[in-house]
Length: 381
Ligand SMILES: NC(=O)N[C@@H](CC(=O)O)C(=O)O
Image 1 (cartoon, helix red, strand yellow):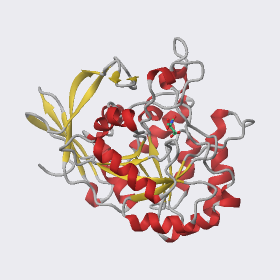
Image 2 (image 1 turned 45 degrees about the horizontal axis):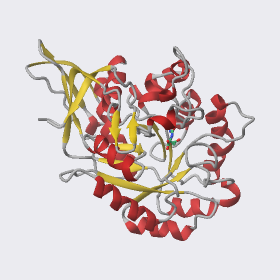
Image 3 (image 1 turned 30 degrees about the vertical axis):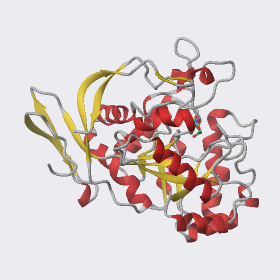
């Protein structure tokens, strides 16, 4: 079967073709009288929280089933601040995988005020660390050890990263409590990210989980191939009404928080146009149910089991299924300078019910769209 083809089970009717770059040509095919199937180059997840211990063992197979690789976030307790810790964390992830899994965790370091340029050299040499994550201190879950003053404390380490072509992954929100939570991404771009890239134009940056039209405008104003963004299913499908629909909805609470509908639309339109500046990053962030349904619930949406179905839904609704594969499977590895996967996954248009929860030894995890019916069912063959 040709790479990047949408496969039908019986007769095939070409819907449309598109070419963004010669090598990315995707043919869209639909079955007549039978179920539609998409065959995609195996996707990677460029922003994933796998946690550790019981929780790691409970969630890792949901990602490993369909994704080839994932950029694994370092916001553990304590955070992964050294290459040695990243190597050990990678071993524990590999140990938690099902025996026949070929899932490849790509590790990251957690940037602090004290990260040294020497640590970047070690990270690059290790062959298992692929990026460094910036959490402004206090911005989100387990960010208390993050950066307090990027310009005052981190320029030497960022210069070293630019030298080694090591991407900086950015949680793009300011933490000033006087800034409205819905404006924190825009203000971060204006006061931190934009000035940082003027100082360090060669630094490779991924703005993670973008949520606003301001982020879209910013990303498109930057050098292609040097600055890119990951986009989550929740920021493509939900707006801030979903936080309050029929009462407080803790399982729709994540950071950056969901925004107004106009922002959601701007992101959908940017991603489904087929630009190679955007790629799949679920920000799947599991928390045990009680940690979300309590007086001060944690931020984070668990979407690993539903993410591929949801991305397909977004591209289908936009009439852009022919652009899905570049977003899920090409733009990420191209940006990171890694080979694209060679194996395939399928998405079959067949209704399936999302489980209400996933029980595990320490409780249960409630997935995004728990108990609802989704249309695209992912499988390996
Ligand atoms: N996205 C979230 O709401 N939560 C993430 C942290 C993060 O990426 O902000 C988590 O680790 O739980």
